Length: 498
Image (cartoon, rainbow, N blue to C red; front, side, top):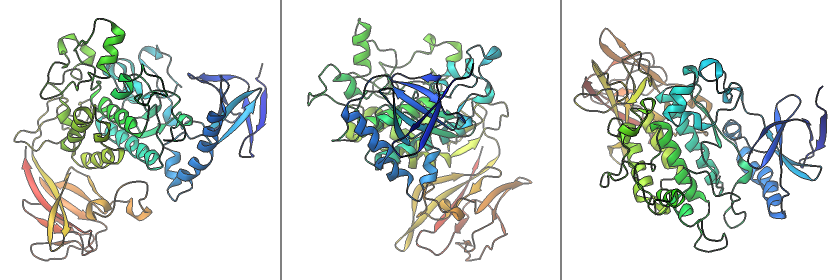
């Protein structure tokens, strides 16, 4: 017997239809699908007060317009599952939201003929943030590789940055409310209907365990009206974002180590994640280190920080992890912002190198410029000669280092933001800035840069013009200037022998 179809008029005046059958249930809502499965209608089970109704009106109205009506609005549609309108039916309030894109549903399910019955279910971040979940249960075709997780983290940081720029906080940022597609590198933030607006709409929830900021945990025993009670905000989002990035790249929690603070489990949890929170890789205090001996075989080497220290994420992320989990752990204002994570991840992606072991499960790693560089995941050493481009840009009459390097590998691309420091790879990129301007190729043991779209490229030492179509051999000490504009860069080539 087919379900009946209910038709309503939404707050934006549009007609909304849904099948009278619950397809999913969250902590607060029952979800119904439209007949064509292009959107869902999620009804709150509890009655909403006037403030909650006003919050929804603002989220589906002015706040939505603020983000999606700008020139780059289309970009954000793929990053947020943002409610478009509200409806009322039989005394319940509901929100209308787009259906998730296909790549956010498991196609292959879990091992052993989908024993866990996840085929067709949405890809909550929790499946990709722990070694047991990822390697023991998921089909390898769902996992992605380490480069794709860097890209996931980059897009997540970008989306959170946009929320915060609009003066909004998610309040419950966690792998429960972020959908991930590692094979495509796509991210979607969900449960946007609980956004916090400082001074106007307080949070409805305190967050999800593992991602709640220490000051929120430590003061959770106080009344919400107590001025000493810390509530979700942009600064607590910053903590949750740092935890998300750490867990997605290293498959362990930055604060859950071996240290026990109290015999009572509840009190131990409050101290571990609150007042006594301690980074498991704190260089000056090893009391909360994970013990590999207590880890399951499927959790290694991820649960062994000695084997896979957080420094494998490279210098830019290492600096932000230090700030997030040491300096800013109990000092919220010192936490890195979402745009700092975005900038660091862009530069980290430029340090990536493919592993020379075709069977390496992660496939990529941040290249450490040492005398014996090797993949940290499979211990395969790098062999051969490798060019590195050190990026400089003009400040006054001289070129100064930008603290930015580009690792070269065969078919690695050069983009507009590499040749011009005034261009940033984000949602505001012009169409002509999205295509590569050159690429690198290795031929008979020699490395070349092929100039595709750099009309002003020249050799800084000889002054020779290097026109479009030319192939420039990369040698130690070679210096290339990308143009005459103020943002033009100088590339200084360094050759590393593995």
